[in-house]
Amino acid sequence: MKIKNMVSVLATLSSLLTCGTARCDSGLSYDDTVKLIKNSMVNSSSGIRQESYEYIRFDKCRMDYEVLGTYPVGDLYDLKFSGIDFSSLNASASQVGHDYTDFVILSFTSSLIRTDRSKDMKIRTVVINAAPEDKTRRLLKAFLHLGELCGAPKGPL
Image (cartoon, rainbow, N blue to C red; front, side, top):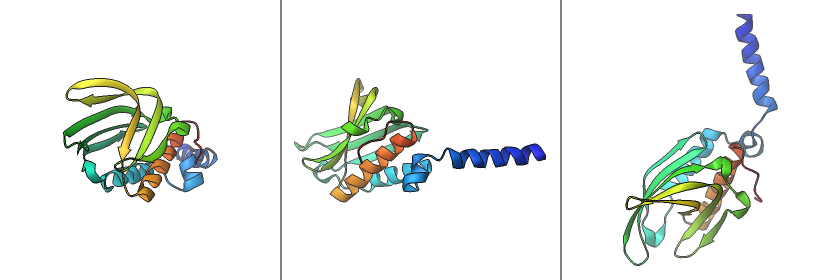
């Protein structure tokens, strides 16, 4: 019984002493950050691209997702992204932008896989369409926060 109590106390102290950035800076835990990212992606308007997500999955610090949409010229796309490792997020190279819609650019130091029509391509940058602009900025901050939680160097925001 004493051992269980000691382990519980040690676990609590360890948690407090090694307070992750999410809990100390923004108050968001890993689970809350992941929920925020999923909800932001699903509920953002991508304007002309008419995007929808078949799935968004997280396994610890790795993300996989599939997005369906329409290129501005009218062609349909079905893209799968897998092995997105947030411990390798390059926060200084990640940013928001705007073309046909607002978007987030995430840059990574390790490769991930983009699958388009059964063709796999190794890439290091992902563009996620999201709008309006305030949602795009919040989404970027959530991704940067997830990177910090996963051990990536802290970014400029």
